[in-house]
Length: 160
Image 1 (cartoon, rainbow, N blue to C red):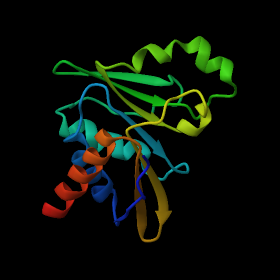
Image 2 (spheres, helix red, strand yellow):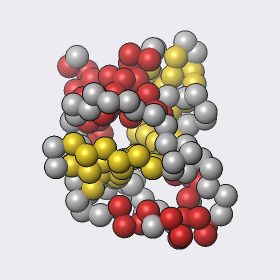
Image 3 (tube, one colour):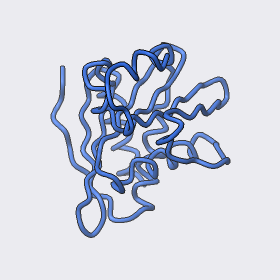
Image 4 (spheres, rainbow, N blue to C red):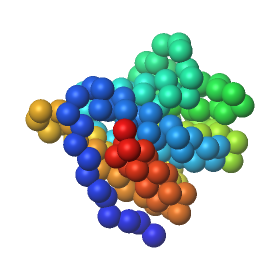
């Protein structure tokens, strides 16, 4: 059952990184996070905060051209997808990406709408919007795990 999407103002890049870090506390195998928003809305910045909170010290880049980046973190395989360049359904079918969406992996998908109808609903869908003076995030949970994830992340942000 889908829950309403609360909105959170993100006044700066630091706030977007903090949101990523808060979401990282719910980083569990089998979970799926969708990130939507216009170019420059902060999707990759959020992922950078997420990965930094999990201890990743290397470079974090948008996988726009590679389509996917794998981050192996203490027994967790985190796949960061970017489907911005997808043109048709056949690209998804021939990519072999479906195998990464499994109980052992955590998947974060930027531009999920480009693979619409090919992906199962995520646990949590975060939409980032440009909203002066910064950004605004909304959260749509599609599963019990997603509702728990969203609640824990928002509670973590309120405590900090």
